[in-house]
Image (cartoon, rainbow, N blue to C red; front, side, top):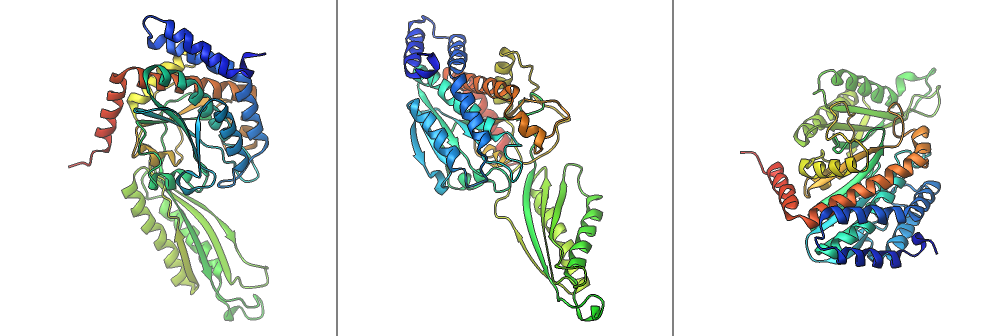
Length: 417
């Protein structure tokens, strides 16, 4: 029987080898971690491709959760469902006591594009890392867990989970995202969604335009105002959006219009300032046209990423050991937003990237979706799994590493005088 089909036997064998080592040093544990993930390659590839072929939108990832929990259960993880009150969130735990090291999995897809952000690979890497990190937990003590986090795209499932206290017991939270370069840190912006509607009055556009109130004019005027505002905001900030409703027919004065807009900033205080300035654009358009404005800011606000450099350095070293030259930082990396930023505000966090395609290929495209089920995609996820599991071993096996991570986090979150 192939080893990957007899994981329990292999795990017992690896533990026997580790126990027989006189020094039990980290190098030996890391070697065992690599072998473990190599042994699991077939199962992890099958899992990743199955997720990719069955894309599910946020909060609807029922198949993904079943397959991930089934895989982790086979490897002796205890499973908790409905974590944080979310039906497609879960927590899989192995070991006992502190420290607790968490791997975070995302598995939601994009509308129409499927896994064009590669979340099938994120989930696969987290699962592989958790299974391999058991070796360190068994030898050194402590707990490893995989926390399944739904709806990263647009909804920010982790934000709700932070509010429910799901991550508070973690000493470190690790996640790795596919991309077009190998980088250990993420430049993520604070972000909030604004939904707007204008209500005007319909009338015949040719016979009685004077009797109408044009809701389309209102949202177009607001959009134009936003374009003017964009010239005078901080370089790292972003405002962008779409008009989702502009009327019924060309010969009817539009009585309703709607749009969705995203506001992003490098800091939460400036985000709140921008929220007021953006809203003024919509309010003034309502006054100018006579249309009534209704608006709603999403309750879930994405926080900026608080990169823990001590944690990132460990990850870089481990990626380098695998032959993937990984940058600690990349000043040319494009800004985006992730709900991992919210986790990083309360727990020392790693959000690394690993390359699965050419630099010119952007995420959220059909080409990136194809890369997410390619051989390069699978290899990237397996390398990320190895590096994250080895980083967990660094934390569990060397208290000095964990102290550095804690100290940096405490300094980075300490309120300024």
